[in-house]
Image 1 (cartoon, rainbow, N blue to C red):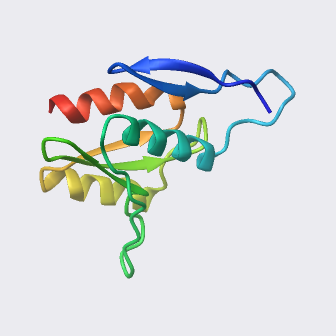
Image 2: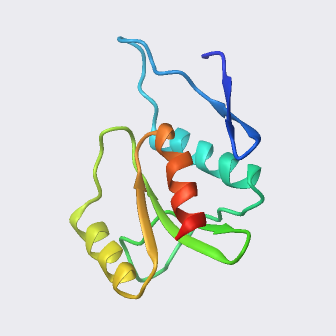
Image 3: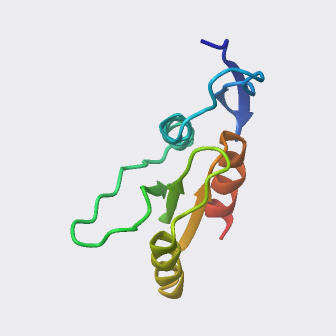
Length: 119
């Protein structure tokens, strides 16, 4: 296991796993998801897993931040892209006025949280 370092985000130390050296296992989707949940909690928010029976393709998580900020987040393993049905669902949510983000690297998390808080 890699030694964790800490990166400051909004004055809160958030764990960051260094890039995986060549030849070692890549970060998986669930690893990126775990980092998102930790980062959201660190800024006082909640990030429940979202399951929508009967409506496949919906985003994995809802991000709820202080001040009534809400967004949907699709998590992917590094380099992976959403499936066609997921893209369709993201477009439907955006048409309703919701923010939808796709995160496939832990380095994107801080920027997404900033965007949710300022939009």
